[in-house]
Image 1 (tube, one colour):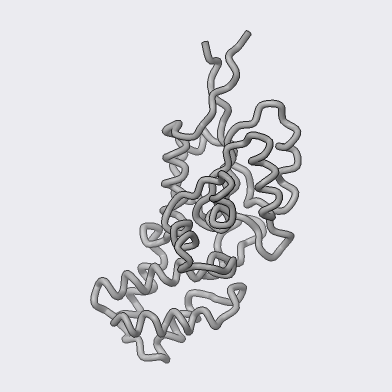
Image 2 (cartoon, helix red, strand yellow):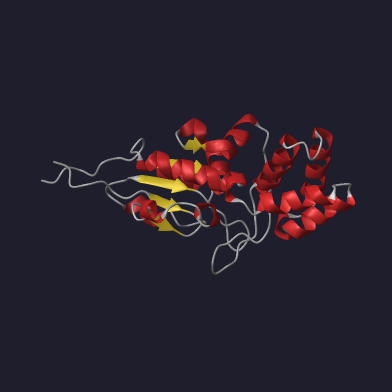
Length: 228
C-alpha cells in the first residue's frame, strides 16, 4: 500500500499567481530558481518531480542547462513551462526534460531563441513582475490583431519596437506610449492596457496553470516507495 505521493517541487514566482490555493497546498512551492538550487536535490535518495516555472535572470546567476541535466541523470522528472522552465526545456527536451505550453512550443519551433524573450525584472520581495516580457508583448499584440484593432503589419512593427528596449527597462506604460507615438490609436492603447492587466492574456500564467494541472493529475508524478 502506498503511503502517498511526494509533493512536486515547483520553482515559481509571478507566473503562479493564478494557481488556486487548493492546488498550491499539494505542491512544494519554492522561489524562482537560481544557480545552485538543485544541489540539495542531487543528494536525495528518492528523486521525485521538479517543475521549473520562473527563474532569476539578473539578481543572481541563472540555473544552467548543466544543472538541469544533472538532475535528470539522478532520476528526477524535470518539467519546464512559462519562463525559465520553457527556456531550459527548449534546451533539454532531447535528453528527457518535459516542456509544457505555448512558450515552450515557441522555443521548440525556433520562433523564440533568446532568454531575453521571457526575461522580466522582478520585485525582490514579492517576486511580482515589474517589466514586460517579449512573450507577453507578443500575446497582447496578437489579441489586438484578432480584435481588428491593429493590422498584422502593425503588430510586427510594434513587436520590433518593443524588442529594442532592454528587458530590464521594458515597462508596460512606456511600451504602450511608444506604440502611440508609432501610430496606435487611443482606443487600441486603452485595450492594450486592459489586456496586459488580464491574466487570461498572459501566456506565462496560462502555461503555469497548465503545467500544474498536468502534474497534479499525476501524469508525471512518481509515487513514493511503498511502506515496509
